[in-house]
Image: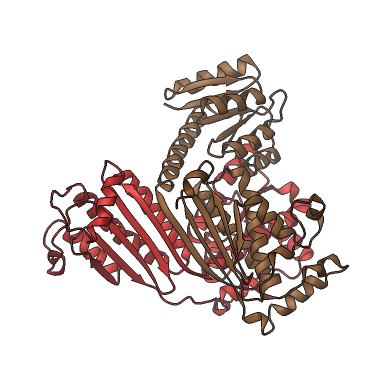
Length: 303
Length: 310
């Protein structure tokens, strides 16, 4: 039996929907009159599916959709509208609504959509359970020094870490940014030997030089080596370049907020902020970054 | 404007083509709308090649013989509808995005189109303002996806280890995941991915069958049995350990169960038993099959052809 939350501020709307839903399978149905209340119910009661009316008090239903997406990405949301439009429907689906129904939709359409989404959710949950049985997930890359590849690799690493569920979705974005900084450092400052002080100058001198060097020897023959190992307790990422290395102590003081706004050394600060451990080898051309699973910091020390 | 297509243009490498040029295919039975869409695209983006056809079937033929970046298709067409066309493209050409357009839609049709996998949806009365930006957006997304795939061509090694319960549902889900992972590597054709997945399924089913026959036999310390007793120690129910590894020229699966093992000679001698069929499948689809001494671990290796473009 699944729990379905109906969000509608009118009693008629709530009872109508309850009647429609109970005609099919037996589900436990809860109701909320507002978006804020709905979020509380989802947090406390654990809901499998949300059906929300377009017009709800205190919060735009598309905002509610966004909040559910952010905090409970596996809970599907069906949007119901009285007077809809093609534009609204496209917007809702593109923002992540799992289904869209209008006033003319039949009871049968609603029921089949609900059952289909609940089945998909059950399969998602089983899939997530299987991913928790993954003991180890490791990848090694040898990347040419092209900036676009660095960003895409950071995206790949982020996906692997996301799949492991070691860190909440809300932290993933910043983790991705930190990894991208590490990769860009290796590519631009390490392999292509570009001084970040160039960035503080006017113009696009830095970018032009990066493009030039990425195809010229000796820079063009240097690779960025990335290895990632994800277990249930932590993700460990090692990025090595073939440049001359650098002295991490030479960077601006990362605890001084003033320095956050300066392009020089900013990447390292972001890495230190968003990862649990960041260290370099003696030469300074290899950085090792560790992100511990939430609540696993104590036990991981023994690894 | 209808361009007739030269099938010889097929010889251009798709990778090369993706980097340098954009070809948009327009599929619409209305000549007026076809002309409008083609005109809007070529006027705003003269660097694009725009092809147009009047029926879905023709559209599929074009997709089959030449590299198309994106498709703009009418939703309501005689014979094959835009929706059927969309499903067919999703199945056969999963990397080609389809944007649906219509003058006869409503909100529910719009939602349904996107749920079915359309890259976007546009009412025809919005074409003048929104078509070009919408196609731009789609191209930006596929460019990102292409770069993401490019990253994987630089993967030199990977290894993933699962420890699942000896349970049919978990085996089924794991096979899905393995198939996805093999597809992600982009080093095998679709049918090879299916064959390798089939072989792994047989090996997992063997582990499922034999792994439940827990041994009462003792093994000498220091042998591979250590690994296996560790498997038993961690949980009460039987566990199957699956290791999927990839390096430049091969993928390898190593599957270990907790059973007492079986006489591997029966495999090498060619078996007549029920399991014989499974072994035939493994032998046919994999390049190398090995067992440990105890017979509770099987390793399947598939050699890969070198990547075509890096």
